[in-house]
Length: 364
Length: 131
Image (cartoon, rainbow over all chains, first blue to last red; front, side, top):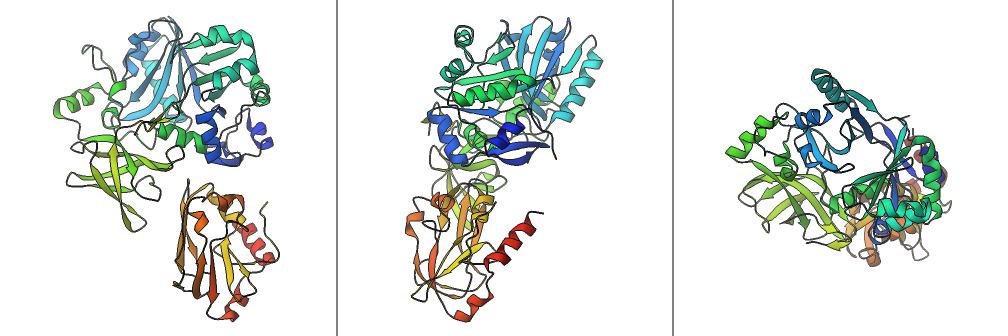
């Protein structure tokens, strides 16, 4: 038996197929993963993401700590509630995890990290915090997290959880959060759709889930979560990047703040060197021209430019064809063709810019 | 709980086989198989006229999660493939024993059908795989 979120019984009652995900018993789907995917693109759906690791870091110098710990620069966080996506790197520039950090107040930052990397993340953050000094690091095991995503998600949240949320939550720009009573509501997500991610007391989660369901929000499993994020061109830790890759090789250059050059952060030397010498590999999108499905770890022959590998491959329900993220040599260009071995048969893929889908619409 | 109709025959590789009045057999994949694979997105079937051999792959089902071969339950010649699955692979999930059938084949040797599993034996196989 794995770890269970406060919503485990709700999932069973709703007919979830439960699978192990990084040591957690999580819902894969509640019947059909593809139907769930379409619901989120066309209407809305809710995800139990309580397995994610919510950690509060407090102290007088908390901002200085994150300035050192993260590849992105928390000095971009100027207003309370603002969120920042960043990688946390090893000294050699490899990605330990990707995360979202929220600026709560001058002495309090909240971080949301991945579930499967919890142990190594906590070891890293605790060690760094100890060396830095003057900080408390508190994992919020008392909290649950529910994401409600889709074009109608916000409206359904107001209907389900109260009109009182409409003004404070509705006013939030993308990548911001507000605390409303016991709810921490953020305009973040992992689907490429509008919506909220809500951090709330674990005890309140089953009831809140039920209220959302009664307002017509269907539950969505991890299966659809993966195809939604892939269409949205969002990286998955452990597939698209890990400690053997830098953010610059993982399509995450936009999350690395090399300016100002005097800011020291862990892993910086390697990124500066790659920037100066040229990044050898890049993450690109692939679209399969024919039938079949692209899968993780398939090799991609990049006509004359060498060999690459699919890091996330699947079937896109929105586009009704196979898509993938792949790490390929730097010389590969958008529009190039490549070849993937699909169960013994060569299949042609086209290199595209991702995201593949944004706000329900094809981008390719 | 898997749905295993009593009147069908089964293979260890999770195909079901239904004998027809004209001597042919209809073949599909079981409820257990489609449940393990999840939502189907692509089905590749043999052509009518193709000769198939017992236990050899003669088609592919691909889901969001994985690809799997479909094996010929007995040797023979393909009479017809279910063309409707090309545009509606999800039929395999929705109605695996009905509209989600995959192909009909004319067995080369009818005695081979006796070697297939009955519902009870297949149920035991499914149960053993769950442990």
